[in-house]
Length: 179
Image (cartoon, rainbow, N blue to C red; front, side, top):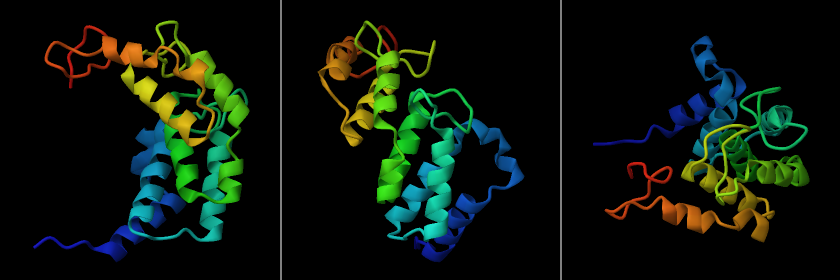
């Protein structure tokens, strides 16, 4: 019989938000993802964050926010659409006025425009790969923070359609294998 050990999950997730074990150093560039997974896990368990922990998370993610837009994997790291997705979803899940107002929407919009490719797709970071994942993270984040407009959406549908393979699946990029 499967049993959810709710209290142990809450303890593990809360502890992880306060302090990560040294073995997590390999995930340094994924710290907004760790926040997202843990905050989302707590939300799924209908658990609320105490004010101090919430403030610590908002402060940390604010330090990950690049002054030109987007969020890096940690303070001072290159802004990236995937870590921007994780950071914004964390802040939206928290949902407080402080969390939501910490998102510099104008800069985030400018960052997304910089990541927009002439194909209609998006690149994950400056000079990075162009793929369906980048399209999803950009459009999702833009929608969440209400900055999605025709300029950001232009060509995305056509790019995704160009990734559809003969068997009907969607590949990460045109001419690649669907999965």
